[in-house]
Length: 64
Image (spheres, rainbow, N blue to C red):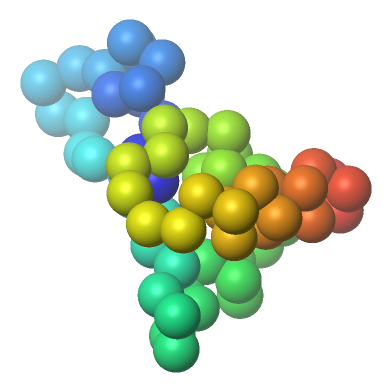
């Protein structure tokens, strides 16, 4: 998922690219602080399991 200033249209030349990734066996997004995970799931879904994405998005929305 891509999120942050590039998605919102507020990027500058010095802006980095914010990406969050969830793998089947390695879940890098899950240990993130809930506010960061919430920002990530409200970004742009790029590829992967859309149902798993929707479930995780629902979880982070309830926690935030």
